[in-house]
Length: 140
Ligand SMILES: [Cu+2]
Image (cartoon, rainbow, N blue to C red; front, side, top):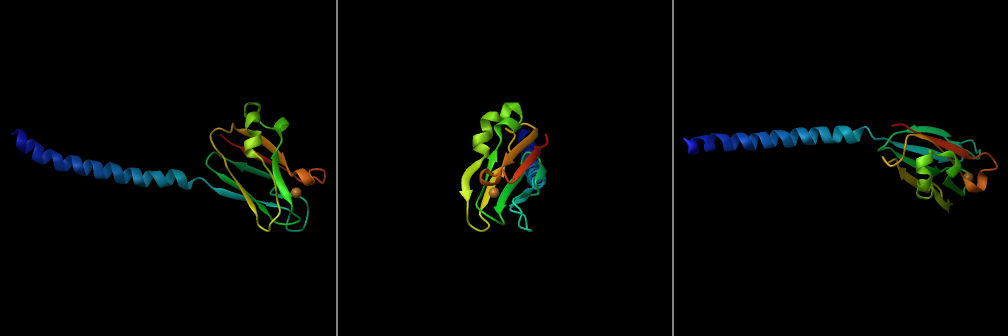
């Protein structure tokens, strides 16, 4: 009796594991696929000292790429006086102070759960006076 039970049960258990694995593999990529990658051009196509788009709304899991477009060099400095209060310590990590000189040179930032929802202002240090400023809005 016990042996019969085991002969029947073992394949069923195997089948159950296969189903669980398949469902897991199917659900996994669905979650990841909702993350998006955005590109912010540094220097507008028309040759203005600006980030394009200047304001971008993102969520945890997204990736933001700043890419050299026109009139380099540029950089990306987050403004410690204009980010959510509990993320001020992260401002240095988020920034890319090294000047980007090469065509299409890119700085990539992943939006992690460590970043509180809110507005994050940033600027390009060489061109801040000319109005080259931007803003990330992180949603929960
Ligand atoms: Cu610049």
